[in-house]
Amino acid sequence: MKNNILKIGILLLISYSCQAQGDNQYPKIFNEIVTLFKTNYFDNKAKGHSFDSLVQNYKAKVEECNNEDEFISIVNSFLFTFDVSHIGFGKANDIKNKVSPYLWYEYMTEFDVRIINGEVYVTTVKDSHQDDAQIKIGDRITKINSKPINEILSKFSLRPPNNQRNYNFLMTEELLRHIYGTDDSEVYLTTHNSSNFINNITVQRKERKNGTILFEGLPKVFLEISSQVYFDSIGYIKFNSFQPSRPTAIINKINEFKVLPSVIIDLRGNNGGSVEATRMIAAELLNNNEIYYNLVSSNETSRINYFSSNNPYKGKLVVLVDELSISAAEIFSDILQFTKSAKIVGQQTPGNVLSGELFPLSNNYNLLLPIQDWIRDDGFRLEGNGVKPDYTIELREIDLQKSIDTQLEFAINLLK
Image (cartoon, rainbow, N blue to C red; front, side, top):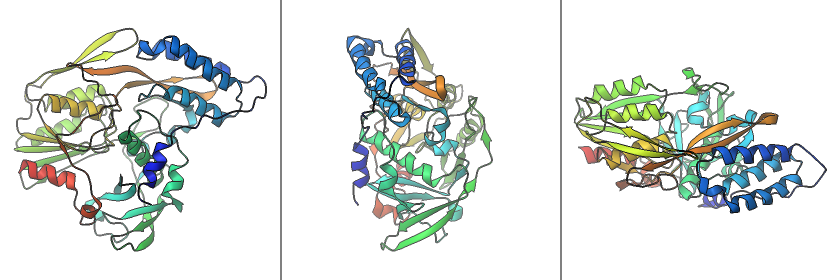
């Protein structure tokens, strides 16, 4: 089964051919999409003569289509031509099948997974469940709720940016949508341990009760932060989003750890969030350096500055990232790396950083468009490139089977 998941990941969208059955709603909705694109899409260079030709090509496909699934796929094929993040089209009531389970799902498990060499491995198990015989770090998962991994991944479409890091992010999130849940307290798994013993187990999900409404019309999000101290000298903070706009709990923990000589910020699996929250948290960690980004939109270029606070952290700092660190988590990591405020450890991020806006359309459809690009003050573009760690460290099956998190272990040894 090695690399089967990655092979599935290369199969992006299929351009569907629809049977013509007279006039329907789809051309009208497609015209709405084109109008919104012309008005709001950040890159004016993409709206020239070639854009008009592309629109005509896809308009012909839409006019022949009267099946909703095929229509959605055709529109996404059109949008994905631009190879940018934060873009897509679909039904508003399908949002739970698209959002991050880390943030949006009411039921969670006490373990996490990653794709390593084409296989799905348990990479962390919460301390309180380490001795649970059901699931162990290093176990390989082959089925979720009786469905083989390959079957799960064959039924969803990837989206840009078109690089393998982003594909790994999207595939892992799809698996987590099946492992986490929205209305069920159990998940059934088939696992293989280090001796290749097959085990069919029932894992109890944990209901999360700290949900908060951040966006009108959308489900609650579940914000989490955890922390501990290693060797009485290294503070460790992990959080899953840069939310809400005033991230008091995260900043309080950073302030508590300012007396320590070293701190690790773990952004693995962090899905980004608020620009203002990113600025406020970064201010407590910047070493009296300034950085700015140009925010490029269709009608203007603005500038956002990042400054140190009056009392920033002065010790050694490491930030952990991986292929599931996206959006504001990438901007935050780039800020600290570029200003030499922190060393970045882990795996290169996907480059999924454009600012997007959700537009409601007729017939209960939604359109997500990127409205701003982020260009660092030296001209570097994060989109598609991501943050390249100072130390690239990958998780390995052989280490996980010994309950060793190689990325965290490397960060700790770097700070000792």
